[in-house]
Amino acid sequence: MASTRAAIRYAKAILDLANSKGVAEVVNNDMKLIASTIDTNSELSDFIQNPTTRVEVKESALLEVFANVNGVTKGLFHLLFENKRFEILEAIAVEYSKVFDEGNGIEVAKVTTAIPMDAALEAKVLAKIATLSDKKITIENIVDPSIIGGFILRIGDQQYNASVANRLQVLKRELSN
Image (cartoon, rainbow, N blue to C red; front, side, top):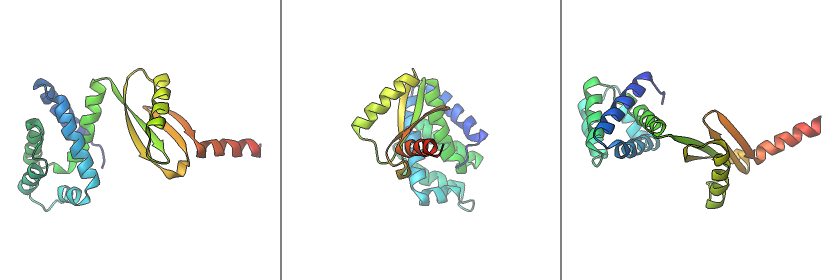
């Protein structure tokens, strides 16, 4: 899924509309649902990307799949129908959440762990985050068994590597010197 300038423009326009109606957070929850649903459902993703499927069919399918979303979100479906741009829906949903978070002073911390985070590790990570950023932080956990243990924390362009794999690399370099 490539992030396009068009997706960013749509996301900002939808956020402006949602803000004016006081539903920006509700629409953000819709966008998170849409992004994760398309990301985890290859059939839906292929359907949206398929250039031979008529846009009317795509719009009515999306209105069925996401029947409980806010009117502003349904308005986005109609706009994408009119402009024949359904293929960027996932990118728009992702960009909306980014722009929404930025506007609310929320930063996303990507935390890579060997296994899914438990409460103890999350507390350690949050303590480390407090030393790196004074913004409100939401945590996104990425599981990567190759780091062996510990965690890698990335906030914006800062990275803190407390993984076992990294410690082993450092040790290996020290021993070879």
